[in-house]
Length: 277
Image 1: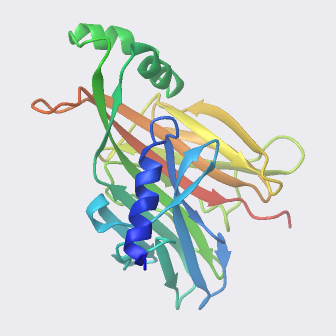
Image 2: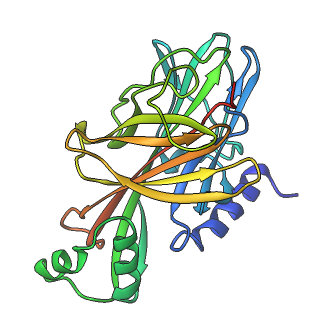
């Protein structure tokens, strides 16, 4: 008889085989708007184009897994093998923020072209010059990566605000997508534009690429990009009823003394735009 942990371990192993090509990682609540005293369940997902497999929670793969509601911040209370990773019932009304940071994983690149394509896609067209300037090999090298993700869930009215939680890199929603009047948007079905702040080591990250994944109710996914301004901020156009994943990557030299030569830190934020009134 397979135990819950054994099955979860097999799932994790199967996912590791595809993480090279399936880069994005996010927290996906089953419902982004719930009633007070209704259980909130959310999964870790890894995949491409806002579609991916569910991953269990493992404490050895996590450096932080918290829930924040109002002034209260607490451990998410997950156990190794839990899938969905997050399950909690809120006794109070407010905006729930779920935050997770992972330990480091590695991926090896046999050819330069694969790494260059990845770096260019994530907004680093100067990667070859940076690579050569460090005297690194053009093939057979390793990158390490960590994930720093948040999700916003409205409990009851959903009143409240996101805030910086001290992640190595993170998005902060500067308005509440469930309750606030947003900046005007364009086009039919627009729900306005959500202002967000992108942080790295606690400071605004200027001129950084943000990849925007928009999923409609029919599962149609549209992908676009924008860049932060000098203040590390950007406006994200929203459509009523659509689900969003924001993704931004820091690409920096890995610390000396280890096998990886590059290190990436992935910030992610998920939320849903409310239906039209």
